[in-house]
Amino acid sequence: MRSLYLIWECKVYLNRNCNDELKEKDPFSFAKNRAYLLLSKKSYSKRALITKLTDKGIDFDIANKVTAYLEDLGYINDVQYASDSLKYLFEIKKFGQRKVVFELYKRGIDKEYAKELAENYFLENESEINNVLQKLLKGKDLQDQKTKRQIFNKLVRMGYDFEEINSAFRAVEN
Image 1 (cartoon, rainbow, N blue to C red):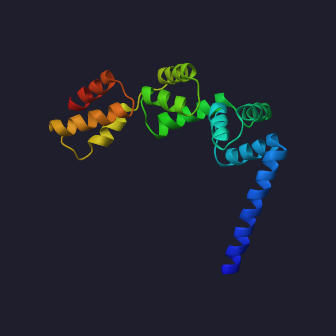
Image 2 (image 1 turned 90 degrees about the vertical axis):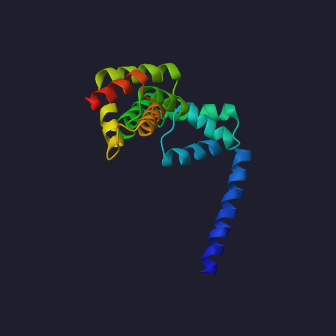
Image 3 (image 1 turned 45 degrees about the vertical axis):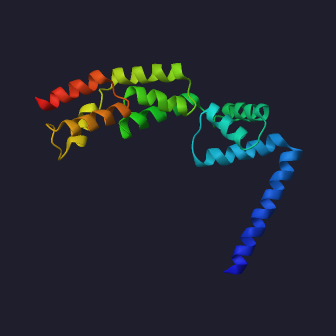
């Protein structure tokens, strides 16, 4: 068991030294390899990948060139990434429109584009607030003001508008 650990430790040491050597000799290849590694684990927007690469100590100009190269190859597609993230946030996470726009911006999508995309999606699909409210109310007394306020606050944190929340509460009470 000890010998396996030593072999692993040597590989890590050699990889670190090789990476440092590659970073000095050919920073573009080093950044490209780092980007491939990051993209193999999950999708990124162009801005988020640049941020991730610069956080790892790669020069901004090189990170920008690498992301442009990967975008040309089709590994980075902000429109597809935004669309996939939007569907995930609306349908799986059940977030409201404001929270979706905030999350998309946080993930590196332009705020105006995120807002436009969310509005279009909201027009095509109905809000999930009634289903979310039913799930949150399951087994709870709606007459208790503290419970009602807690659920209201939870829905606000999920990004739903006050009008939407109030109308959903009225629909449940009737």
